[in-house]
Image (cartoon, rainbow, N blue to C red):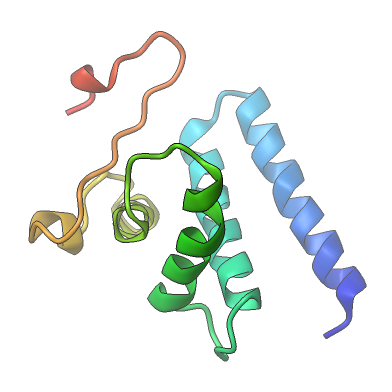
Length: 115
């Protein structure tokens, strides 16, 4: 794989996230962030396609080790699924109790008011 187009595309994705954040387009920014995790998870795997496993492995190996997030990789995968597919915090995994729902709050908002 030629690295320059990959680097260029990842930088474009980061620019898109920045542009969304500057305009306070939080949901589109989150969707792009989850897409970036999908891509980096796939790049870090030996799989032909991005999968739940490649997403969760990358989150476990990199994101959660480097942050104070109080969630699991499955919680984030379920949050990704809900946001990408229904624009909600709900997924089959959260509905069945296998993952916790993740709600987002920014600025002066409180998560307590989100659900």
